[in-house]
Image (cartoon, rainbow, N blue to C red):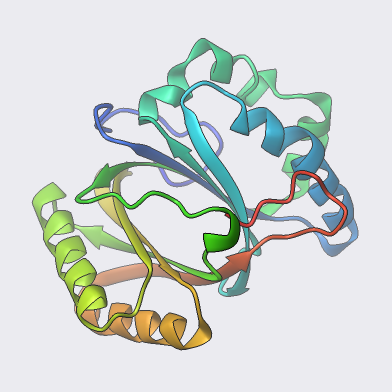
Length: 225
């Protein structure tokens, strides 16, 4: 699948593995309030209620670009081929979606399969305070797993993270690996990022963004999980 565009193909993903849908974008400043209204009251709850969607969370980028990240944990990538999902996506999107989405920039839609041990997303009072999303290119699945394993072990040795999840996604004939590194404090977040930078120094890193949970006062759909 391609990491770009709203209609990325699904071929090559392991349907037996847990999946992840990551969507990044940024609206113009004048549209940000409406963008969050759309996400909070229509798009986000609609997606979170679909079959095969295990959990959903929104994040604000504080180091990197674009500003907004939505994460949807899936039972498998096959959830994005279900009749229920197809009925509300792409050309079947709502009028509000069709008005808001074309005005956003930096949009990336990434569909990936989990590799290695898979930590459950945190929620409620145990929610993570920081999240680092790092992506790198790998020659093949074995190489992606090797680097992800080294990164996970290094984070564990330095006690730098509360959670670690790794994924792979084919992209334009290549393979992209992704890691989500969660931390509960600024100190651990800094250690986690330093560890990831060191471990991935020789890899082809193409993204390392830092996020905090999205919380919008007064919205019943705000979710910092």
